[in-house]
Length: 478
Image (tube, rainbow, N blue to C red; front, side, top):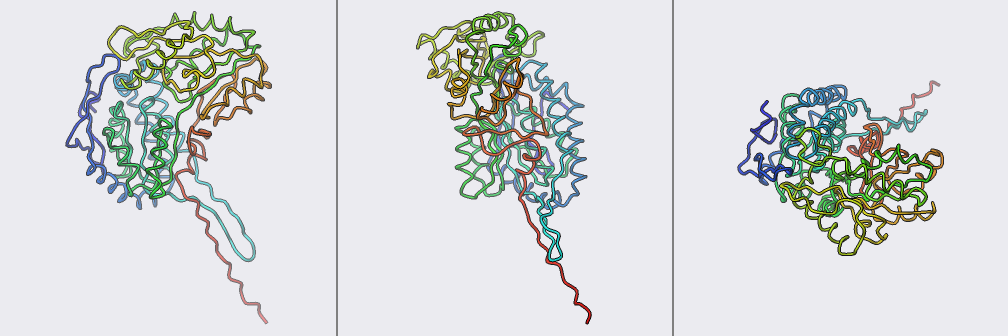
C-alpha cells in the first residue's frame, strides 16, 4: 500500500477518487502535503445506498463472525502502525510518539470492542409466557470524527456500530482525512462491500450527512456549538444521536500532594497533544498552601519541553492542527493580555512557519476570565488558587460543560469523595485521560448526549426489542 499518495474514498467496497479534491496542509510547515477527495452529494448518496444494500446481510451475519472481522481489522491497523503513524503526524502535527500511541490504540480499541456481547434479558419465564428483551441494530450509521484524534476516535464509532450489526458511512475531518482513507484501504480487504464506507469532503459534507434521510443514527465528536446543529439537523427524521462534545475540565490539586512527583503529570494533563484533547485539563485549581511551589515547578518543567515539528526527533509538543483553531487560541491569549492578566510563561506568538503557540501558563486570573470560562483547546493553562473544598467544587461545577475532571491528593479516600461531587461524565483520581473500551465515556450538561465505550456505548447502536411468547396450555385430560 502506498501511504504517500493515491488517497481514495471507500464506497461500496471500491476505492473511489471523486470528481473534486481538497488540499491537506501540514500544520508544522503550512505546506500542502496531499489532495484528498471532496465528495459530492451524489458520492454521499452512493455511499449511503451501498451501506443500505449491505445492511441486511451484515445484520444477519452471526455476531461471532462480526467479532472476527473487527479483530482482524484491528490487527491490520497494528501491522501498518509505522506508516500510519508517520502519515498521521504529517496531517495532524502531533509528535511521532503520540501518533504511534494513537494508531496502536485504534487497533487495540477494535480488538477490545470485538470482545463485547449484546445482552439478552429474560423478563419472564412462567407457566403463562416467555418474555425477553434483546438488542437489534439500527440500520445505517453516519459517523463524523474530529481532527484531534482522527484514528482512535473514529474507532470509538466503527467498533460498536459494526459489532451491533449496523453498516456505516464514516467522515473524517477535512483537516485530517489521510490516515482514515488509508484505513479504508485496509477495510476494503477485510469487510464485505458496503459495510464500511469512508467519504471525505469540506464544510458541506457534514450537514448533508446529518440531514440525510438515509441515516438511522448520527455519531458525532466535535464542539458543543456544532453538536447543537447536528441535533437540530437530525430532528426532522428523529435520527438517533450520540454527541461527544466539548469540555472545560477542572483539575483540583489538594494540599497534601507531593508537588515534585505530580508536577510533570499535571503538566501533561493540560498539554498532551498540545492541549487539543476534549478531556485535557483546561482549568487547574491549586490549594493556596502549595500554589507557589506547584506554580514554580510547572513553569520550570515547561521551559524544558521542546515544541516543534512532530516529525523531528525530541519534539514533545507539535503545532495547533489548523489555522482556524490557531487563530482562536491566539485570540484568547490576546484577550488575557488586554485584561492585564499575569503570564508566567509563554503568551507570545511563535515567529516561525507553522501554527505554533508556545506553552503558556497564566497566574491566577479571575474566575470570569474568558481563558477560565471557555474551552481553549490549545497550549494555554490558567492556574487558579483555592483554600476551601466546598468553594472549589462549586467553581469546578460552575460551567455549561461536564465532560471530565480530576482530583489529586495523597489521601485517596478524600480525593475520591471529592471526585464524586464533580458534575462530569468521567472523573479521575490521581491521573487523567485514561479511557477504556470496557467503560462508558460521555458528558453531562452541554458536553454531550449518550456515551461511547463499554456495554453502554455498544447499546447506543441498537434498538431494544422485547419479544413475548404466550405459552399454549395443553388440554387437561378428562
